Amino acid sequence: MARDRRVEYTKMVIQNSCIRLLKEKPINKITVKEICELADINRSTFYKYYLDPYDWIEQAERECLKTSQEVIDRIDSTDIEVLLIELFDTIKANFEMFSVVFANHGKLLKEIFALYLEKAESRLKDTILQNPAGSQKWECYFRIYGCTGIIGCWIKDGMEQSPKEVASYIAGLIQ
Image 1 (tube, rainbow, N blue to C red):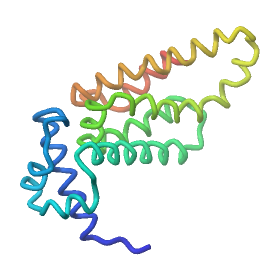
Image 2: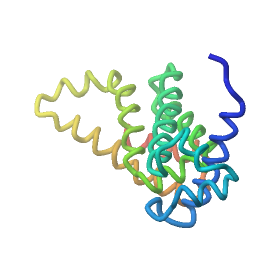
Image 3: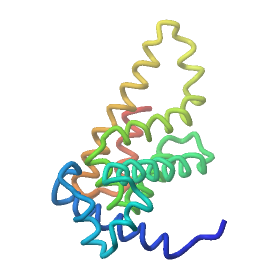
């Protein structure tokens, strides 16, 4: 199916307007009218693609998750640090979108790590299966989901450290 550059442009201006407004106030205080005025579009144009601001953020979340899944699927490595560097490079390259989505919906970070867990689980399977009580599995999940706080802080602080620095630190915690 051919890409329609006009549709892409329209969605981009809506996205930029939503991101700008989300930096100023929470989503429940944002109106379609404000988005349209900022994007310089008609309300009907907005409604052609989204039901309301919540639908926009939900679609943005799905797009971030899809992007993350593509990165994770593309990597043919069981090296945790390599995988994390690639993932964090992608997050940093899409800083505006990821930072707004993460700030407003922290569950996305957990979903991305769930994708990561699927990729890493085959590497950890032998270790996990050796312990019938499952405490190693619990420890693995605790470490990985505990790292979401570090990543959230990194994003909130403007990603001052390089993706490699953050990946190295987290890899040290979860290995």
